[in-house]
Image (cartoon, rainbow over all chains, first blue to last red; front, side, top):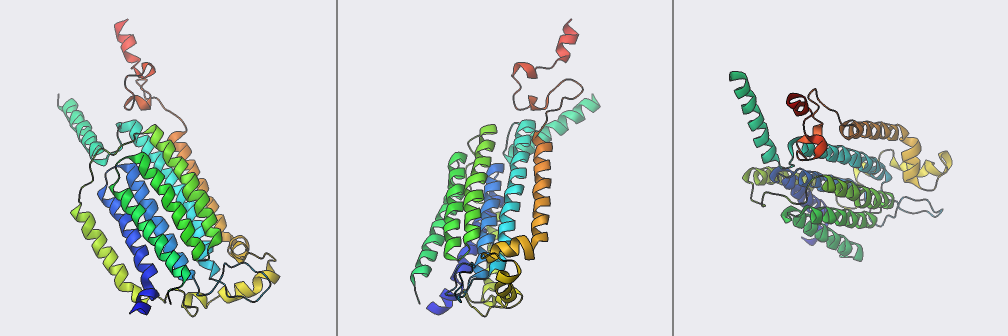
Length: 129
Length: 205
């Protein structure tokens, strides 16, 4: 029983983290909070990949001259790339949040929807009058 | 079976979960951003126990450093509090139950944690590890894969960063005025002197 848990506990805890991130994105209306949720989701995916690369009794993949067991370096390379791409998309998302705040005066999705509705109605009134 | 590394691993994952739940419940955005930095730092610690030292470096510098600075800058330009109190979202709960359930249902098919015979360690990796010293000459295998064996991936990454940087510059770089002389941040700061419409001056004179 303990062996079965030890085989997969890392995956389960990381999936739990992922789901918290996803829940923040779905349930919270504040745009900065949504981006934070996306970041949590993203970091959990990184941890999942690195978990797959782990080898028991392995060390960091740096050659020291002695014969050693190394963990799989390929997920490390993929995730290095993913971290940098992740910060680029986060920066773009935050820039969008700043622009939305400038145009609508708010960063709450419900208030943005109300403002859009109001704008559409006033346009209709202008045309009919 | 329960060695030191496993215990550290579980403790770090428990701390990460606590931080994530705190972020979920917190309404003060400044605290949320600070906790995001802590989350990145804890995950960097976890990456070290999983032997990914290069990734831990990058995560600590980029995740805990640059991304926190960017978010604090955004907070300075927007506002500090979430207006809606946290409430239960039934659709959200449904989505995470189905997604999380499906993922956990799939985990028994995954290779065991730390299994040296897992399929992902069999193909091409042994030749990278064996050939790295002679073919590239760098002791760090991650660097030799990143910069040499898989350097086109890194080139693609640079293209993505360039595109994102262009996007940020286009979004924030200049302020346009429309035909009435309104600058675009009128909606955000309607009472500022320079934002008052110029068209009024013409009609009164």
